[in-house]
Length: 192
Image (cartoon, rainbow, N blue to C red):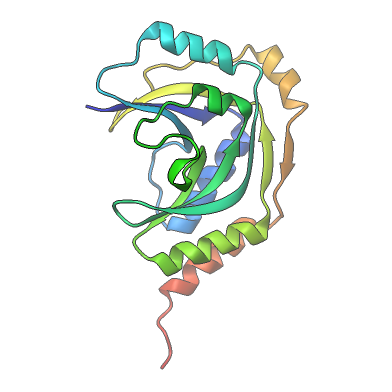
């Protein structure tokens, strides 16, 4: 069973927004947490010392979320929001997708489809919305298929509160309603 190391969002506002955006665009709730995959696949559980070292490197670093892109997958297309931070380059280890190659870099998948036109429409929508979020609210989590977190550690509440004062949020009001209208425009029967 393959395992991956994710960065999950601990800031409830960020996590809720990204999850609702993905659910609205796809029209279904996947149940899985919104995340950035930073390492894997591993055939076995990653070494605990490695995870603790990664966790130590991560402390005090934030992530900028903004900009959109699309890449082709085996199943179709993935549309994503870019995730940027100097720490991501340091902790990235994905042998099948070296950072920056193939047009793939740290990201948050918000829409998956077999339809190339649909992927382009969602990417254009996200670019027009100009979402910009900066958050320190991230944590490591090890995931396997159909299994919850195996490693999780959060910042002390006082430190998390101090860091949250530096966070930034630029999301235009009504984005979820506009995303819903975009999705619904595909499900309407065409008039001939």
